[in-house]
Amino acid sequence: MGVKFKDIISAEKIIIKDLDGKIVAIDAANSLYQFLSSIRQRDGTPLMDESGRVTSHLSGILYRTSALVEKGIKPAFIFDGVSHQLKGDTISKRIEVRRESEQKWKNALEKGEIEEARKFAVRSSRMSPEIVKSSKKLLNLMGIPFIQAISEGEAQASYMVQKGDAWAVASQDYDCLLFGAPRIVRNLTISGNLADPELLKLDNILKNLKISREQLIDVALLVGTDFNSGIKGIGAKKGIKIIKSNESLLNAIENLNLDLESDPHILRDIFLKPELKDDYELKWHAPDEEGVIDFLCGEHSFSEERVAGALKKLKNLDSTQKSLEDWF
DNA sequence: CGACAAAT
DNA sequence: ATTTGTCGT
Image (tube, rainbow, N blue to C red; front, side, top):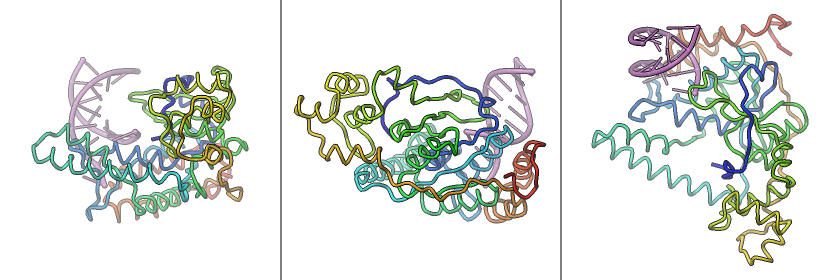
């Protein structure tokens, strides 16, 4: 879910065309979770193939990625590695919420309460190893690069933007600001039915708030992150005030006699010194059309007509494209 | 969520 | 041409 920074973060509205020609590092976990939550039938049942395997994420990856490529965007997916030990509490809480929601979903279905059922179904979404595996397989067949992070995918994606290997991270979460991503795109959707895409610029945000990135991390640790529960009663606005008047988290802890339950230095270093990968390659290839069709239509019950439409968008990039084999 | 059809 | 609704798997 990430740090609750909505109240203090300013964003600028953008349109998809502003991303033409740009490399975007997509937070895979965030993106897949959205697909799994939202691509469902009205009663909340996810899309499934004949064998009963969930395919919502494959639908999302195929249609969104091909649409982004058609618009001239070069997407790369960044997958999570092994999460930090301190994320354990957050992970177990999420598992519990999913378990409860699944029960409430079934109960609502039995009572015939369709809307209620869907609400809980959305919260029951879980990312199994099979879902990650099939997502990577589809990306490979589509010729879209993905990178396996050592730890948090958001940390790796943010690093890639800092290095200039990608223009922005695409994620709904504000955590990438803490990981130092200079640019974050939220609501990266095509037909923007609801929220328009928006761009978060780290330097602008820090300037507006008149704090440093280290202080923004300190605010997050007061508010609560995936790695600590924060201080009860302190939200983003109070957090900013406290860090500004005390200058740092360490001072605030001492002056206000706060208890953070984990060593603040260790918590800060999750964001400041994550384990990162440098030996990655961003290379886009022409799709293996037959492979995509075999995989989606043969194994996962997709319609050949619809898949063909998506493939057309994938290969029909720009006429500046030099080779059919490698785009670069 | 995005594709597609139907309605405005 | 643009919005609204349903289907996809």
